[in-house]
Length: 108
Length: 113
Image (cartoon, rainbow over all chains, first blue to last red; front, side):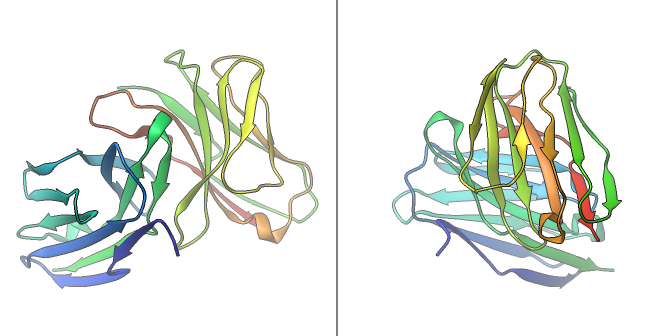
């Protein structure tokens, strides 16, 4: 069992739908990261969380430290949001443990 | 914007060839990392370096080797490529902004025939 589990693995939505991607982790963390990976392979950092909630545009990330769970929400989804979304748990010394990612496809 | 460069972006090559994947950075970071990402799977740390002449193996065992002769360069070498080495290889440096994990290069997609 991976120390960082994401669900769902694949997600297909229609443009405009509200999207939720979940991440559960079993390790102690100093921070939880949400990353976006495009088909070309490049990785972009979306959020770094240690508590509570963060919002950037149509993206919202939340974390519940007690439950070791984080969610990434996308409001009013758009085809350009299609990508793989990766959850990564950061421990000591910047060590990262990655989830397998959620492949999101948003159809027009 | 931090600069971290990986070459080549894509490589398709036959079994048995020696391969070197290049990673370079212009920020003067001591720490550098190599990750391997198999299709549909999570990233795994395979090598890291804390500075010149420092190299360590990561969490995932890899037949590749690395060297760190200069701060700017952290090349990864496969002496004899095999189809099992087909994967994406991502190089990274420490965070360049407070809300980042590490800063990743664009990766090299390697296919061994």
